[in-house]
Image (cartoon, rainbow, N blue to C red):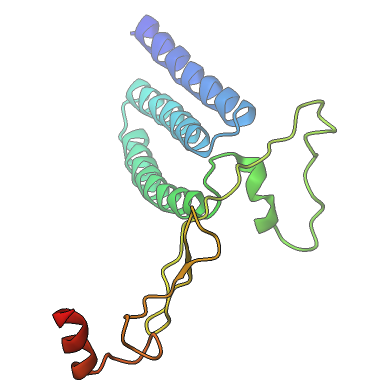
Amino acid sequence: MTGDVERYLVVGALLFVLGALGFFTRRNLIVLMLSAEMMLHGVSLTLVTFSRMHHNLEGQAFTIFILTVATCEAGLALAVILALYQKSNSLDVELWTDLREADLPPPMAAEDAGQRPFVPPEPKTFPRLTPAGVVPDIRDEHDPDRVDDAASPTAESPLEPSKVEDVIKTAVR
């Protein structure tokens, strides 16, 4: 039994240490969240091991609470990560420093750390549609002086409908 307990404790400690290393060395939020989950599972394994070693169920009860909290934390963290990703289009933690409290100092800049600063890509611009009721100004590519203002050949202004008599006259010609 002693050899099994030591193995479980080593695996629990290894899970916790790997999770802590991942949490403190990575900048991707999803990796940070997974590293925190790994630390919680390492603690859970250690609690279950001590509970089995002492022949009681307190470790299993604590593990159930830890797993419940970890599940809630994972759901909320993913929701926050998705909302923030839609805002900044990146999972880099350093880009979200503008969300900190106003009285807190800014974190160490990338220039101070000797790294190249991250430059977010330019936002895409999409064409806009002409508002309803306004005649679009479409320039001809081959003749810059000619403007297609969507006027009919018989109307006096582009927004005015053609007269029936003028339409009939142009159709007969």
